Image (tube, rainbow, N blue to C red; front, top):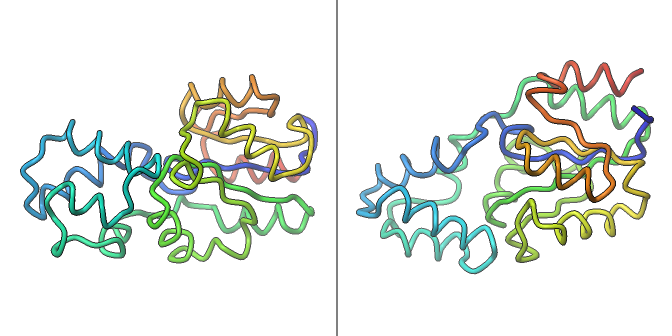
Length: 194
């Protein structure tokens, strides 16, 4: 792989351990707080919030848990993937610009990046709710390219979902499937150090 000028990381399943945070973390959390909605209805409400149609407060209200559920409490269920900070330090030392491209609710993305101390290392955050487009739609990759200001082939894109990797490759990124091409941040750090 060509040495990157930028590395774009996915959030769920890459920066954070849970690959399917909606099914693994959000649906149980909402049910524990008394929502009568089905998992499918909670997932659809989340999809709307991840497109910016609802704020996080609107999500809690729409799922019937406003007043008992909150952003900080929910986000505390997430865990940072082992080796992330070491990778970020290696990238910084190599002069590689770091970014995150994620389907997420704006407020939850902010809480998580602050909670795990990622704001100083990861310079650019393109979050679906902020722009009204979700991966794997081409427009979200075009927005990331615009923000990076470099040719896409000078950027690595790391995601754990095949559809997102394919779409990134079609947008010109050097796409890396986390879980197949690399299985840990140690391997990603080693690839960057080569």
